[in-house]
Image 1: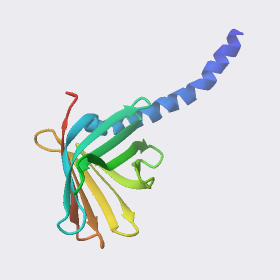
Image 2 (image 1 turned 30 degrees about the vertical axis):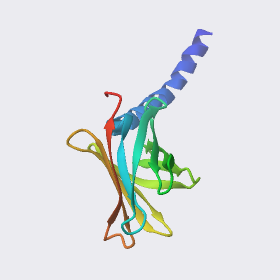
Image 3 (image 1 turned 90 degrees about the vertical axis):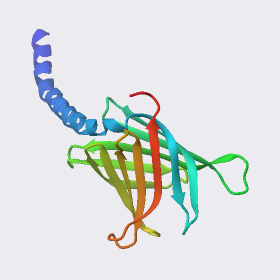
Length: 180
């Protein structure tokens, strides 16, 4: 019986070593996103056509899950629409970000309240990330998130028909609410 367990342990060691290596590589990469962790609140605006800018109150939450191997980001924006007395949800989104060690790149899936989803391109830098996708109706869309000099989450959204000229249609600035 002792020999059986010894052989079993020896057979399991390569799998355990590879799992630790896999987890370690992912952990190092995923730590680059730690700057987003926490609860955030602030204001933003989105432009709906030329000169039709709407402001909203925004809350974002970014949490590490599965031992830090996945980042969950959930956003909610509310605003008063013209002719309405109460606030309505104008932005509701959910995203997962993870590091694909096989492909050696970050991956992102994002969903909107409409049920639409995007498998986004994502590049992670030093306290910033840029993610985007192609929209068949609008062209190329990209979002840039970074910490500003005051440590706030600053994000812009831009659109381009040709990939050369970018027009800003979205901006938000959020402050960390949980003291991290």
